[in-house]
Length: 116
Length: 114
Image (cartoon, rainbow over all chains, first blue to last red; front, side):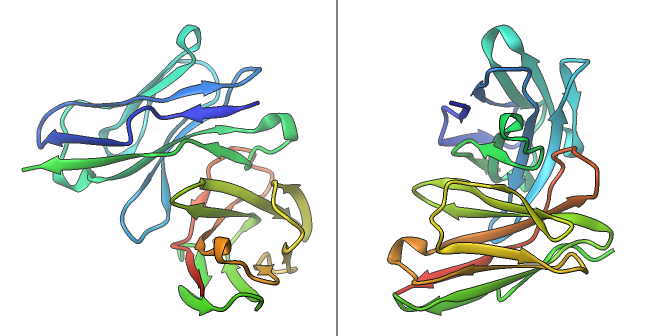
């Protein structure tokens, strides 16, 4: 069955430090992969997506992610974290097997805290 | 451009009651999806509507239903509420024909079942 695993439930980094959030997926074909961010009391916002082509994807707010097929991973990175990046981050895969481009399977999320 | 609007934002119901949640998508978006978010189960897909037709459905009981109107606005209904239905219900819209997976989410309707 298709699934997404985010191994880290909570991560704390210092402002200005680099960040990497891990995401592993299980999917029987070429995956459509996404990272969304949710601030407290808000809905989700798309950070970036991977469909095909260049495996290094640039997103908004200075985030990037790298698709590694051999490792079934799609890790999110940012070179220098800002206090406003504190939020919950969700990795997701599009469930194309059921014909659902808009049917996403989400990971459990990683809550990011940023220390000043 | 207005974002996705969900009403009501908060509501409290008791077991056995039913509830209807409303979602107005971004203007021009014809696909509306619904997700349930709980601390235990995370984000789970409920269903997607496109041009007033249910295009996809998640693994939820028949108590969960939805519909979409000709103006793309959508409603979801939960009948015979259970304690476990307490959750944040998120609506997301996307462009017609754009199978991009780029969903624009509303802020959600937080349902508490007592």
